[in-house]
Amino acid sequence: MKQLIAICCFLVVLFSCQNKVEEPVEPTEEKEAFVYDMYEPSEMANLMNQMYADNLKIKQDILAGKTPTEFPMDFMKIHTAEMTDLKGRNEVFESFSNVFLNAEREIFNEDSEVPVEERFNNAVNVCISCHQTECTGPIPRIKKLLIK
Image 1: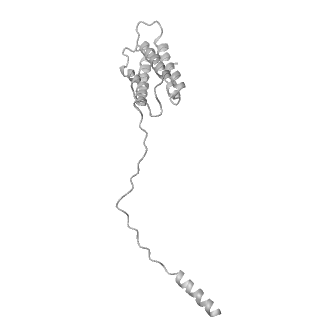
Image 2 (image 1 turned 90 degrees about the horizontal axis):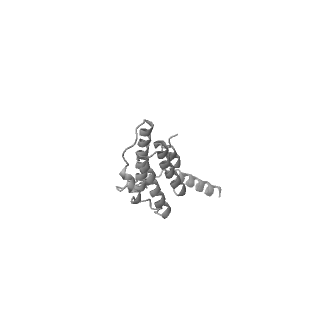
Image 3 (image 1 turned 120 degrees about the vertical axis):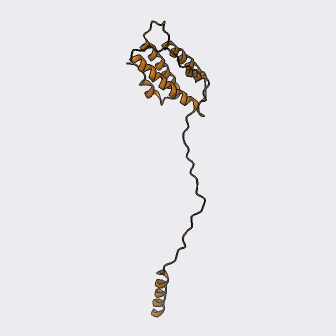
């Protein structure tokens, strides 16, 4: 009996210690393509970024003592620019768009008795007010436009 157990243990050790030769796995020719879900800004987001850049230039001109003379006609695209998928135009947006355009035009009104800095800040404050109703993320950036 002891011999049978010894033989069984010997066979288990013998077979368990054998190195198995693993066949190398050949890489497949097809590599999986990674598809990244990249953010692409909407036409409206691009327009808002452009309006920010234009207003930053206007601010710099005002601070340098230059009076802005030409209203950026691209601002008119606010009524037609394609918005993000989750957002849509509504009455509040359309109302703020009209108030914004009027405030921006007023910056370029040479006959106004209101100081240009105040007119500029009024236009920026319209942006902030609109963004408080829907898309609040850009508010800190917009506030940087204010002339102090």
